Amino acid sequence: MRNLFFKLFEMSHFDTGIKVTAFSVSHIIYLILIIGGIVGGYFLLRKCPMEKKVKAMEILIWALTISYISDFFVHEFVYADYDVLGNPIGGGLNMDKLPFHICTVLCPLSAFAQFNKHGKKILEPIVILSCLAPLMYISYPASIGSGEPWCYQAVQTMFFHGVLLAWGVLNIALGIVKPEIKRCWHTAVALVAITLWAKLGVVLLDHNWFFLKEDAFYIGLVGEFGMPQWLLMVINPVVFFLAALAVYGIYYLVMHLKTRKTAVAEID
Image (tube, rainbow, N blue to C red; front, side, top):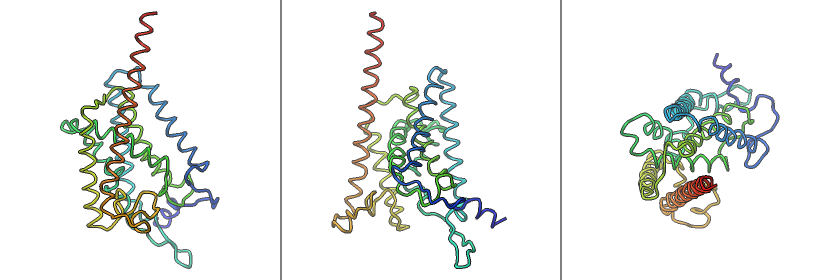
């Protein structure tokens, strides 16, 4: 049974040499599937009553949570290595999947915001960040691994980020969450909290969570270029907050154009 699981979760099933690298064909196909799924979900749900829209968001969070938690049970097989005789050696826990990165910590936070009555207070900033963090990842999936596009690791990673992105975008697109710029400071507070939480993980477990030890593109800002490491605790949340302001701007622009179109239609 153990050997069967090593076989099921191995990185390559057909030895094709195909990988999900940034802007490769397989990466673009994943982008099309994820974006197409979100667009399709919007057109499928846009005329539904609010209760059904909320229920759809709950289903997405269930899928996200199950994907995230169940993944820990198969790390031993997914990240296995092989000895000189070709026998599998268990890979153990993948530290990168612990909830200290912004995308991984958004899983429990989005579940809390979706299902807990007190979580509604943080729903807007979590939705805003769920539009940003997974989008940044799927746009440049640098850490997806060396497996084939259809192996478990690649599918689970893109599925997780795709579902999180869909939940964030559809909450806004379907009118469940209506962002207000006067509440943008909530997102700033959430980013500070996430940064401090990630820093705790960095200090205790010595891992590059939320890219607080080295920059996201690993171009050597801290080492080669001599930038102080603590500066990443400022740069990363500031960049995310500026991106969050862009989300607010896009939302207000779309709402303005929609209102203008409705007004013109009424005049005609």
